[in-house]
Image 1 (cartoon, one colour):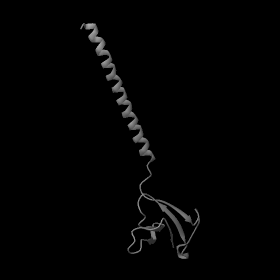
Image 2 (cartoon, one colour):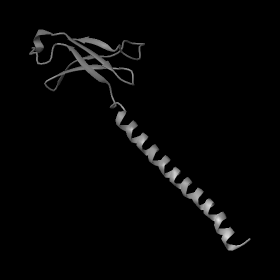
Image 3 (cartoon, one colour):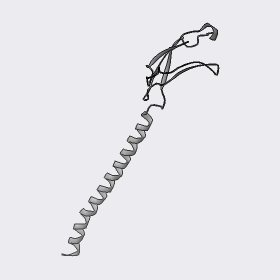
Image 4 (cartoon, one colour):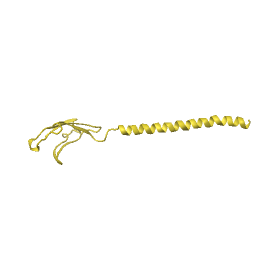
Length: 109
């Protein structure tokens, strides 16, 4: 084997290594991009709660015993509803004895 033929054999091998290295780098970049996009798409921890009644901006009196209708959803079961008004807890709803969670909607007074 001559020196020229040895160089010819090394060139394809080194070319394959470069291609493999580039493919590995691209795969790592793709994985990083997927992880970043998944992190952004994850829902925030905790339940999502929407108040159905009273309407937004309504003025109510605590003494009137107004009805509050709400809906909650999340990855974890709902184990307690609390109604807070002006920094004070006015009502709490927990599962009945023998039950582990509450339904996804509730009414509080």
